[in-house]
Each structure stands twice: as structure tokens, then as C-alpha cells.
Length: 202
Image (cartoon, rainbow, N blue to C red; front, side, top):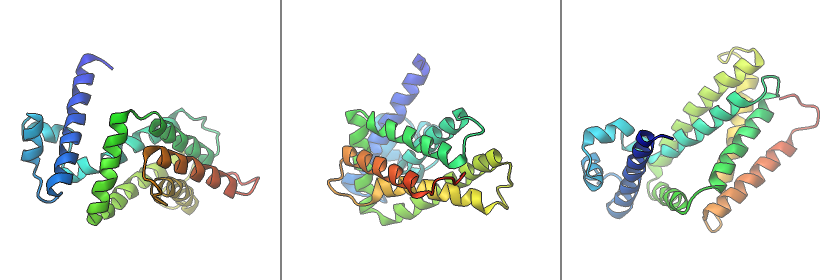
């Protein structure tokens, strides 16, 4: 990453951190883009270079996870069964979680608190996840030589894989630490892989 990219990433993370603190201190709905930008000492226009809205910022982890999954799928052998390729992609997300810095972990736990305090954001998170599934369905359908608008099995493969991730992230909470979340993800992925009968070429 060059100097320009490092500066942009530093600004992006500063905006996220300022927003999460404001959301938790004074409430999500009460926090404005102008307030977030003011804490970071940037203009609202700069804010919108990084995020299209408060919702986009609050659900930034979807963008991050989707990027890892798509990049991993692009690197997997084209003749690899799609479900196997998706499991490798989920393990790449798991590795990213396990390699989180202290700042990354704190950021993610703040986000979990934000979602717990604002149930309407959970609905928006589900909608954002559906966008990711549609993008993944296009990739998986291409691997299978199928039409994503007509091939139901493609969508079932993607839905099963992404449900594995949701279970790992969300159920049950236990102590709510990043270590616990990573352990749940690993357990969930292992269970999903063992759930398919030997010989299923998914």
C-alpha cells in the first residue's frame, strides 16, 4: 500500500471510529454526518467520498467481508466445487478476524453494541447481506455454467454458505469477544462442511 492509500485508509478508519463513538454516546438517529466529519476535522463532502450514508458506514463490515470473499473466489481453481470454494472464502474471512489488531477488535465490538441498541440496523444489515448473496450467486453460477436468474441450486449453495457465516457471527453470543466470534465461525464452518454427504459435488 502506497503513501496515498495509507492516508486514505487512515482517514476512513478515523471516520468509522468517530462515528461509532458518537452513535454509542448520543444515539444513532441523533448523530449527523456533519458531527462525524467535525470530530475528524474533515468536510461532509470528504465523508461522502468514503461512505454514501450513515447506514453505509454502520455496515462497513459487509463491504470488507464481501471483498475478501470475492477476491478468494477469484483465486480458487475454476474446476473446484462451488461450495468448497465458498468454504475457502469463508475461512479467508475467518483468518482476517483472527488477525485483527486490538483496534480492529474494539471497532467490531462497538459495532455489535450499536446493532444491539438499534434493531432497525439489523434489518438493514440483512438487506445488505442479500446484496452480497446476489453478487456471489452470479460468481457461483458462472462457475457452474448456469444462469443465476434460473438456477435454484446456485442460490441454495450461496445461501447455505452465507448462513454458515451468520451463525458464526451471531449465535450464541457467549462472552461476545472477537476470540469467541472467531471460534464460533470456525466451528460453524466445520459443521457446514461435515453436513454435506460424501459425494455431493456442490
